[in-house]
Length: 74
Image (tube, rainbow, N blue to C red; front, side, top):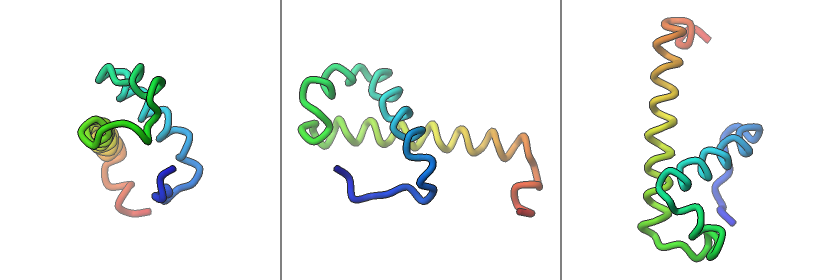
């Protein structure tokens, strides 16, 4: 189990869904089901994490574009 906890605890289930979505896209979901995350290689886990970050950045950029200056004024 990871020692990292989300800044927003309510997001944990969504982050887990994103992790599985990315793993599926990378065709690593079967490996995870067979071996579990703890037994994945560093490379495999890094691929999943890196692609999660790309998706989150893309999401944040779209939100910023949609909301414009409203985000910065909160």
